[in-house]
Length: 373
Image (cartoon, rainbow, N blue to C red; front, side, top):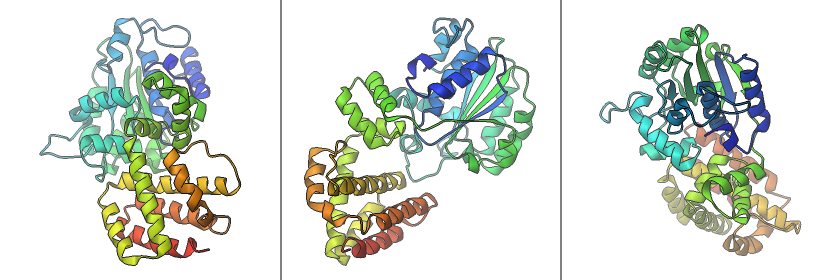
């Protein structure tokens, strides 16, 4: 991944390139932004530029020995750190134990999100961690001499998932690194980074991607037709990770629709026994999948409002449109605000490890009343 491969985030891209041209690259950078905004791609592209032996004006040359090794993320001076499922039995204690899997996932998805990564490791419900053994490994690697005599770079994805012990161990290294050593941290929630770590970073905010940029990315990297890519971009809401997952796992949208249709019918009919059965089945899904379903419900609610005001729906499939035409009167100006609040609150509590069964049953009971307004 090079800067020339990114048809998005030109403002952040130019900011990084300017730092390089002016030889003012800070030793510790934080690229912070929402999930799927392209900040991991920016971090890797900037790493390629820093490592390149003969860089051009705005990008790496793509042909030197350094770039050739970088293309497969096998450059010995490029180190990757990311959250993993800790397990002694599976020999999974530091990022290097999962590096091959992580690199292959990046190659497949062209970007990566927590749901995709946790699922790839085998358990969507288990939280990834950057632990103390990882910090020890980082200290050891970053104190070695550079293999090619140039810069050494650590790209850390999701530093907010470092535990306290790991963060404290890295404090001194980040504050006083060896010469020509760079730390590029990529965060989806900078507020969760240990304050003493955050204070040592130069923060660069990465804005949300424009829908057109997401669409262009999908056309370029997955060779899909532009009309389809536009639909995917709209459904993703500008989240590149969601767009890729939606394309590669198109069955997820069909599952979400089936769940949504059944749920709305149960809530409107106030069938408590079948609702409990539905909640029990939903709770067996991964936490990230349930979060996706909540987002899908919010999107379908928005589409209902568009239909009520006779605004054309361009982002929905034919089977969704057929259901929404009949269902849209039940989500209207009288209850949409409360439904949005209810779903957003459910997402918030689910992120904080609320019990999915209890949470979704409570949401269902509240929908019993709201759908009759």
